[in-house]
Image (tube, rainbow, N blue to C red; front, side):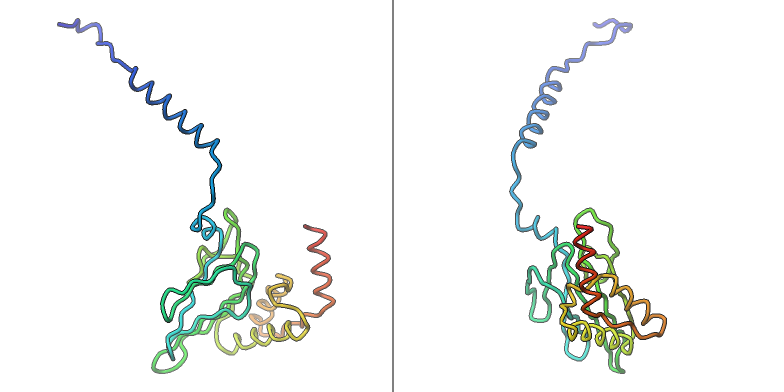
Length: 195
């Protein structure tokens, strides 16, 4: 019988051995290089789900450099964009009585760990440069995109500040200033200096 004043000795040898084994496994894992998998590389991309239901719903990309494309169903596909890529995402929905929603967003895809704003059908989200609702205003944005293309510049390469400018001017009820080659050259010089 044990003495009540003296506690029994507990054997920790098995516990200490398990701790040493776990520490060795962690050290080995830290030394082993990781090979990126398809899912890991996909997680670095911004994914946009596009869908089309005749006379009901249309989601499409107006411009953007697509890194990957996956077809999920006959009516649904997913477009992926690399960090830093700028794209325009248009959403239109209707019911039996006509158009319910019309929206366009110009978004910059973000890198992992970078802050972002959530947006429906965009995973994880992005840096929203322009967000316009209602078909007349969406048409103004589409005209601004056409104007950039007519100036000889791919809208993906236009200065992000231009899309913020277009957003602010249209939201205030004014016409946006055109994007010129001079402005584009100034943006390229600024990016060269900053980068």
